[in-house]
Length: 261
Image (tube, rainbow, N blue to C red):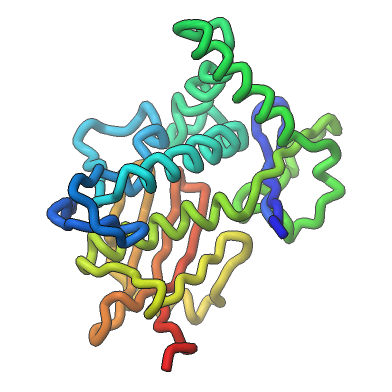
């Protein structure tokens, strides 16, 4: 059964609520299948970079097959459409993202009939995600960092409903990509488990202090901060913290599968 999540939308008082390149590999980091020809999968999607991103910021990539590349591109585009409506568009951390997504749903901007219809379908699908009265939703159902702004007095607030599955898959992609780029390791599902925590704080203050003291900063830029703490004996085993646009926080853990004999 598919569980859905919500997020708060910023514009028009909408709300979302939430229940170094190493491309020498011969197999996909995401599905582990060997391929004769691999593509470059961006760790942070290209479309997620705001207009304020300096040209000097490195766009990290890792090897993936075309099938996985296409699959994750669709997921990331849907997430960007939702998330970009739930952050102040004047924030430098997301500058330009909302305007681009708004144009992508403008039928009159289509290059041809096919493109115009695609934009209209995207707009209709976006509208289907909207919900009324998100104030009635329990606070623990909101995505961390995307709750209702207490300064908004307008009762005419909308919300977005998006699948948890999409955020989980995106988080798993980041985890697999960082593990490969940082330790040159693949996460084999027959040996390791990935645990994702997006919807609530996964650790207490003591554990957070311990993580910060053991972790190293893998990436620090205007779009994202990524920290990783790995085990010495088995560097695949790790804890990863990701924060995008200084807003979206994701924690993940890679653990040895305890069910293996």
